[in-house]
Length: 336
Image (cartoon, rainbow, N blue to C red; front, side, top):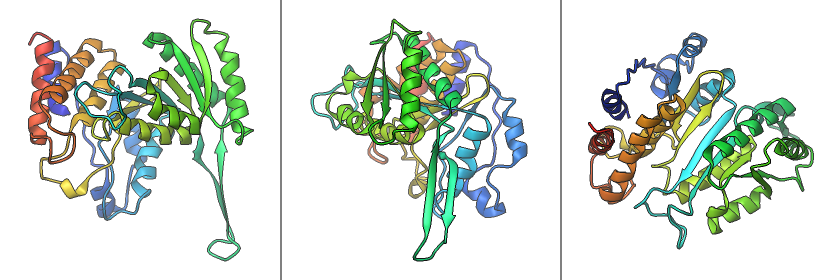
C-alpha cells in the first residue's frame, strides 16, 4: 500500500508525510495496552488515518476490535462507514450471469450508534436465571446526519440516483420507524433522487439475485455490518473489499475490510488489493481525484490481466510483486 501511494505521489506531484504507530496484537501482548488516549489526541491532527488489518491468534476476539477499531470510530466520531461494492473486470463473482455492470453500488452504514453503542448488560450473570440485554441506540441527530451523507453521495455519484433505505420496519418498530420517518422527510429536499425501502432480509436476497437494482444503500450499524460482508463476497471476496470510516468534519480512517491472517505472516503470499483499494479511497477523500483514479486503473489492470486468483498463495505473484504491478500501471496512467 505504501509503495503504491509513494509511487503515485511522486508521479502526481503530491507530498505525503507518514507516521506509523505500534498498535495491535503484539503491543497488547507486550504491554496490555490497545490504544492510548495520547495517540488518539495525536491522530486528531492528521488529514487521514490508514488502519492495517487487526487480529492476533493469542488475543481473545473482541479485545483489539473494541479497543482499537471501535474506539477510534466512536472517539473520532467517524459516523459513516462507507463500503463500495464494485466487481472489477476479470474478477470472478459467485453470482451467475453477473458482471461489473451489475455489481457497482455503495453501502452507507451508520457507524457510531445502534447495537454497537454498548448499551446493555447482564443480570444474574452466569446463573440459570441470567439475563443479557443489548440495546440499539438510534438518535434523530445520528440518523439524520447519516441520511444526509447518503443523499448527498447519491447525488454526487450521479449514476442511477437511487437511494434505498434498508431496515426492518415490520419488527423493529421503534428504531426503524425513526429511520423511515427521517428518510421520508429528507427525501423531499432531494426531488432528483429516487428513494425506496427494503427489509434487510429482502436486501440480502436482491443483492444476490439482482445487485444491479442498487445504487446507494443506507442502513443502521448492525445491518450495515452484515450486508457489507455479503457485498464483499459478491465482489470477489475479502481480498478486494475496502472501506472508510468517515467524519466529514474531522479525521477519517481507511482500511481493508478483512482481518489479519496470521498463518500467512512472512510468507509474502497475501493478496494486497483490498489494502491498496483502501488507499485509493483515502486519496479520493483527500480530494486527490486524479491520483485516486490512477490507483484504481492500476488495480483494474492487474486483476484483469495478471492475477490467476485472488486467494492467498494462488495469485501467480508474490504480494510484493502485485504491489509493484499496481504501482507501475498507476504511474503509467499518470503519464509517468
